Every structure is written in C-alpha cells, then in structure tokens.
Image 1 (cartoon, rainbow, N blue to C red):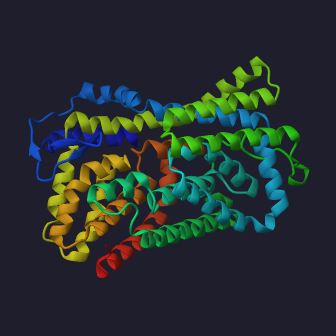
Image 2: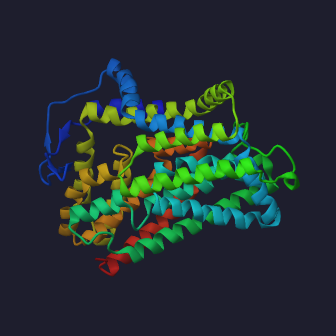
Image 3: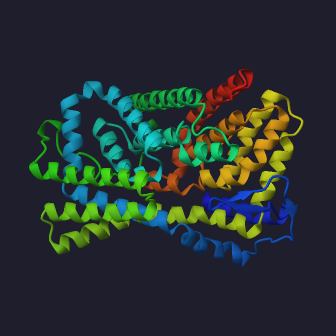
Length: 447
C-alpha cells in the first residue's frame, strides 16, 4: 500500500505544476507568506529518483526509526524479566475478569490522557503494555492498538493544549495561547468516549465470534500470559524493574516539558532503562546480547515501515507539489457558503496532512494562508484553527505517511491495512461529531 502511494505521488509530480510559497523565518521557524504562491519550473520525479527517495526517506526518519528499535529493546528486557507479564497478570487477577469491559474503558481513557497531556511519540514505550493487557483479557492485538494507539492519537490530535497544532496555530493567529479550550475539551472527551465504546464493542464481538477477529495470524510471541491468572504474583525483582521503568518515564516527562527533549533523548532513556533492567535481573552479557538482537528482530519490520512511509514526504519535496496542493485547495474554498466553507476547510487540511504529516509543519505551511482566507469568508480565526486541528488530528488515525502512527502500530505488531479496517468506522463517527462541533462553532461565532 505504501509503495502504491509512492508511485501515485511520483505520477502527481508529472500532472501537477510545481510551485511554492515564499517563506520567512520567524522565531527560528520557517513560515509561509500569504498571497506569495508562484509556479516554478516543473521538477517531475524520474524512475531512478523514485527509488532514491526511499533511502532518503530512511535518512530523514532516522530518529523515529531508532526510537522504535530502542523502545523494542527496552520492552524486550522488561519482558525477559517477566515484570510486565506478572504486573498485567496480577492486575487482571485482582480486578477480576468480570470487570474486563470496565478495564478496557479505563485503559482507553488513560492512554487518551497520555496523548492529551504528554504528547505522541513520547508515549511509544507504553504501547506494548496494552498488547499484553489485551491478550490477558482475551482480546487480540487489534484491540490493543485500539486501546493504546487509537486513544493516544485521538487524545493528542484533539487535545485542547496540543502545543504543536493549537499552540502553533494560536501563535500564528495572535490569539491567547490555548484559548477556546472548553469546546475543544468537550470534543476530545466525546471522541474518547466513542473510542472506548468501539473498543468494548469489538471485544464483545470477537469474544462471541472469534473468527471475526482482525488479529488472526499476527505474531503474539512473548506477549501473552504463560500461566493461569491465579498463579500471578509480583516479585521483589518485578517491582524493581517496574520502578526503573516508571522513574524513566518521569525523567522523560521532566525532560520534555523543562529541557525541551525530543526523540533522541527519549531513545537514550529507553536504552538506559533496558540496561538497568538487565542489571537488576542479573542477566549475563550473553543474555543481554541475545535479548537485544531478539528485540531488534521483532521491532525491525515496523522501523522499516517508518522509513518507507517518510519516502512519500521526500518525493513531495523533490517534486515541489506540496505547496501547489495547499494553494489549489485554498482556491476551492472561495465562494462556498459559510458552514460548508468551515467543513471543507477541515477536509482540505485532512488532504494536506497526508503530504505534510507534521502537525506544527502543517500549521506553519497552511495557516498563514487559511487564516486570512477564513476571515474573508466570515470565519473567525478560532474557527479556522479548530477546522485545522480536526482535519489534522483525526486523519492521523489512518495516515500512512505519519511516522509516529506507523511506529506505534509496529510496537503492537499490527499491519496498517488491518488497522485501517478496524479504525475506519470510528474515524467516520468522529468526523461526524467534529463537523457538528464546527457547525456549532460557526453558529455561535466561536472566537
């Protein structure tokens, strides 16, 4: 599927004119100048360059590729120590399987809160825990992805305090930072309720009809519980490993919010957690080496897909058609009725998101164009930013060019085609609710 998109984008470089907006650097970040779009000499991507974009994509995505490997190594050490298995087994045993639906709802909201408050790729280490939990409850890896990846993507995408989309948008629009939080909070909470409901519904369906599971054939080695629930107890060493993991997460949170850490620092902490877990578990050097290689072998396919997906962004840059798509979509919005223009603006951001998967990058590339366009159509700046957030945030659920999504799915060992089959009905429901929120925003002149 990803290779098909690569071929499609290559063909588009021949069909669409190359063009670009002028950009200026403000506070160290490149921002588009409105009304500055101009066509340039066509730069179609040749057959050799199409394949050359793949190694260039890996080069561009090296940080995310490595955090997938580092997260896999860390989880490999925690799995080898049996700390995660014992912790999940003890939790499910204490709460009781009769409360498994409640557990799914609670965990969906916990992962959603992580997306709202912590970020996206910052939470990658939490994804495999959902896989162990889902299998312990009798679910599958698709349910694990719904609990973790689905909830975190929704929480992050619709977060009222998202610094990358809402924060950047408010800065560009010169609005109070994170203003209009009430409507965004209601929308985010409603979306997480829908995700939790769908997770429970899917779990009930595969419990009654196991053949309807989308997780058939997926690799669940070292993720399931190896003995009956009643036999699970936490050992002193297990508590020590969990304490190391928790301390590492707290260090990451401090670094992200106070020291401006990003992907490389997170990878470093993951490796440190892995090392300390190995030491307290009294692993020999040979055991540690074997654990690293085994974990890398499991995480490698997902890491490969991250680089493969990033090749699409590289092709867009080589063909200079990203700005052309943004410009043409903004022209389509001209002359539309007020309510339709707000919804179509959100849809246009959805389309653009497949070509500019970075939230802050998309904000810097499109909002300088969309904000004055929205005002000319009669939309407040707050509505334009809400439309942008909805289009960007919700489409991330199925965006094959988003490295973070591919990375998290790989941690659940879920192929993106099966994920799209699972999450697409949820996406349609969420878009319907979000568009109703946009209509309400226009009706009340949300500002």
